[in-house]
Amino acid sequence: MMKRFHLIVAALVWSVSLALASDPTGVWATQDGESHVRVAQCGKAFCGNIVWVKNPIDAETGKISTDKFNPDPAKRNRRMLGIQIAVDMKPSGTPGKWSGHFYNADDGQTYEGSLILGGPGILYAEGCLAAFCMRQIWTKVK
Image (cartoon, rainbow, N blue to C red; front, side, top):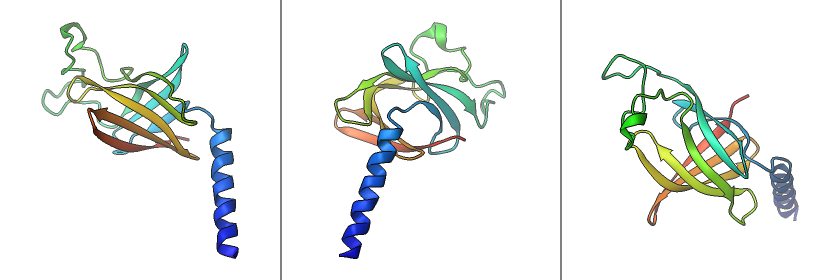
């Protein structure tokens, strides 16, 4: 009986925390710790831009890292800082979930994706290609 009570209390606390953190705004550390992404309101949607990188120097060139795999040649020389990687994230119909696209600077491709609140200080970034999806756990930067 007591175990069931604790489970109910935990579920209520989790629900309240999601309600209080009703959107994904803030600065989030990516799962690998290589970058921080600022998620903010962009019109009627949310977007996420890179605001910090652990290693700003490209190991191959010895110069500042750029968006060298971008399919648009005019964008290949832009610095990684400031690049929008979460694009047009709109409410999905599921509370705490926004769907849109992710730009992956590692390959220059854009994928369908979602931002999903996972509790206090946790944001899941999920990108999909067809039925294959990958999920990262982002943690809120204080």
